[in-house]
Amino acid sequence: MKKYFLALSILLLLYILYLPHYHELNKNRTNIQKLGYTPTGKFYKSLVGEYRWFLGDYLSFKSIVYYGGKTEFLQKGEFNQVEYYNLYRTVEASVILNPYNEDIYYFAQGTFTWDIGRVKEVNVILDYVFKYRTWDYKIPFFLGFNHAYFL
Image (cartoon, rainbow, N blue to C red; front, side, top):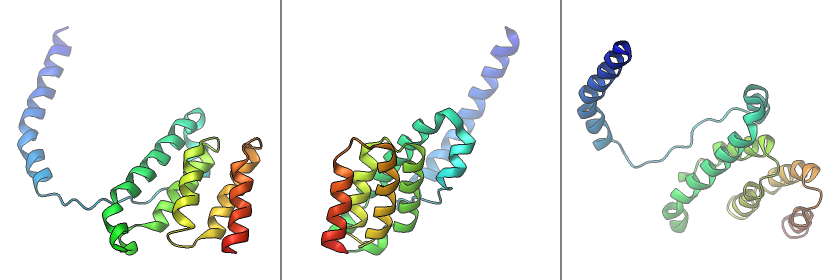
């Protein structure tokens, strides 16, 4: 019991010593939000196993929150402030990990087709999702709409 108390005391002391440094780092941090690099969905799928559903949901949430944080740039028409390539890779990895998540293909349809005109890439995602969600009528609707309106 004394070992655990000693270890906990040391950790608490290190936390107290690091706290001012952490506060200083956060004070000087910019508000620029970066999405960063996301490995492929197949790599994640082989790595995380049965937790792939959770990771897919996390990546879809991360994508949507990142894009929502860029609304002030999007309203001004500054589309170059959004990391669209990394966003697409994150969406694609999320779809591969959890193709049953409806939010992510909805997000991809609304974001990539209208904002930057990447209809073929969205159709690849929709084709992949339709292999799993055969009962969902919105996927063939989006595919048909993309072909009729954009292509």
